[in-house]
Amino acid sequence: FQCRSRERSAVVVMGSTTLAPVIRSAAELHWAKKPGMYRVESQGSHGGILSLLEGRCDIAESSVPISDMEMDIARARGVEIREYVIAHDMIVPVVNPSNPVNGLEFDTLRRLFNGSIRNWKDAGGADVPVKLVVRDFKSGTKDVWCRLVTQSEGIEGVIEKSSNSAVLAEVAHEAGAMGYVSFSYLNNEVKALKIDGIAPTIANGMKGTYRMKRPLYLYVDEKKVSREARHFIVFLMSREGQGLLRKNRFIPVSGVE
Image (tube, rainbow, N blue to C red; front, top):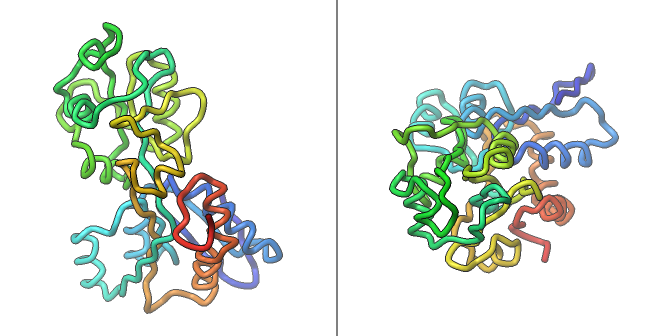
């Protein structure tokens, strides 16, 4: 998605595939009377942070905190990182609607994703092989899932996808498939699972009872950030911006019930 301006350079935002759709909507709303003032590209959280460190974007959007290695690169390049938490999100395990399983204990979820359980009959389901669908190495969602649940590297037959939408499509297509996506991407073509009896809902996310919850970040280079980019971040933190995030099924950090 790209808009160009002849009068001034666009504010370029790169990174998280989870955040990209709502950031595009926010940019359209914020710059409604200034077409061409922004460009939003989704390439994964780590891709966005790398773009910021290389000076190719004004704002990096990320669903995972910047890593120690990325901070080391920033310091070596003289980039002064400024972090903003703009909302929270939930990462939700999803299965094919034909799967009779509606919820899992957390330990069972972990054992499914570390390869200890390879057939759904051992997790309360039918006699069907488990087919894991995970995100690729650029994904902040994958990083957070590995920290909160477990890693799935080295398990035979694991399928990697580059976006939430691609995970949803695979799980919707395969009876034994199981993946994880941002709550904001859930649709009726997959089944979201309860964990320890807690359903993934905004209310449970706000109360902190749903287990897989994470902050969502924006990063800028404090030395180079433009006035226009700052104004956009202020808009996202305003009541209107937080309301838009809530409308898109993220958990706001301020100003919205």
